[in-house]
Image (tube, rainbow, N blue to C red):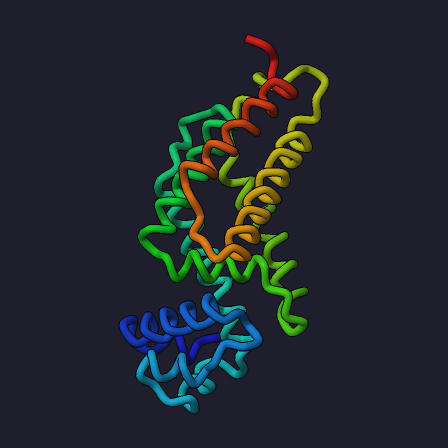
Length: 208
């Protein structure tokens, strides 16, 4: 679908991607300016819409691109030999914070995209998030030691409940920090994360 864009040289692709990520992350979908993106990327507006037929197509391309980049980096750094569910979940959270430091615009874009309420792209993003979550969770938690969970539990559903809760907490924290205009604080969030981990362990794990 984006063949014209993918056929240009990588350096030019990256300029366009970086400019668009930054603009959408800072202003959200509805108020982001394609004129600003073009100026930052050093291309004409006509050329941008030669690559992408609309602002919506550009936004959705960036979302898919960002999810893929984040997924690749997580898979590169997470130790799949770790079979404890909560330890692997902690690893994933730590990797996300590391990526926040190395790719701030990409991470900021995904944060704002997860909160995006624009009528033009909101429903499409929700479906993409659902599909990505189902696919990635299956990969990231393959090989988990399910024997640690209490007998009689539906382990898959239990893990889903935990993951959905943690995602909800993460989104709530992003909304709170955005409303207050402050950066996410790693130590504070990981401390809250650990408290929930202990609660879930006592609820769903067999006692040692």
